[in-house]
Image (cartoon, rainbow, N blue to C red; front, side, top):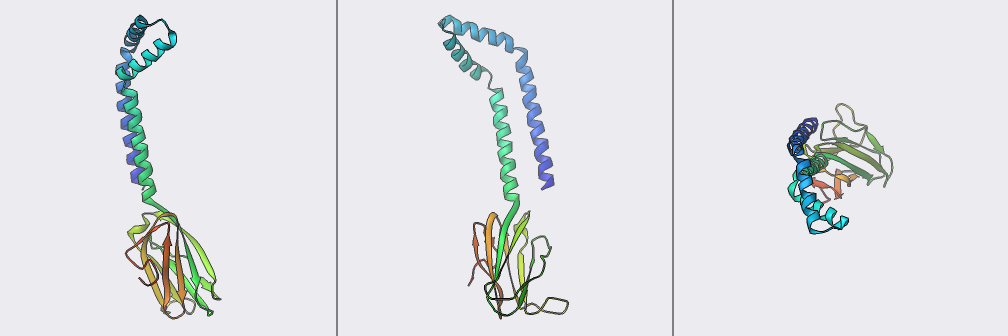
Length: 200
């Protein structure tokens, strides 16, 4: 993501410099052309408002350089915004216990970091987390559950995984006593290459 920002800054600088060179070349003869435009506009009418309007229309046709430079900058800003949005993620996950027994759960995220181990002590208890990062869908997000506190040598009851991506959405999970965790549904976000809803 950092490389993209550096390349965007370089591209923006190149566009600005090229636009500046075009404007400087045009600036050398601006005064003469401007005088000529106003002189022609005043030959057709003596109304100052009409002269100004005619002069402005003519200048927009004669000097399109500023408009092109602005359009280039807008395009680069739009492209930068689009890639920044699609390059990052920030979404919520909600995990709900479907048992009265104690169960533990833990996420392993797309960047191989792990969440804290969270414990459920009653049916219907929920935990909410927010996942942020860049390029979240390059690797799966995994949720594992255990019947006892997870430590070395304790195998999980089960796990579920999928590639997740989005901004502002929520992924819902349930932890079952014998089958382990399961993704229930994705709301307002993308889920692929794994279990994205209950029964699939």
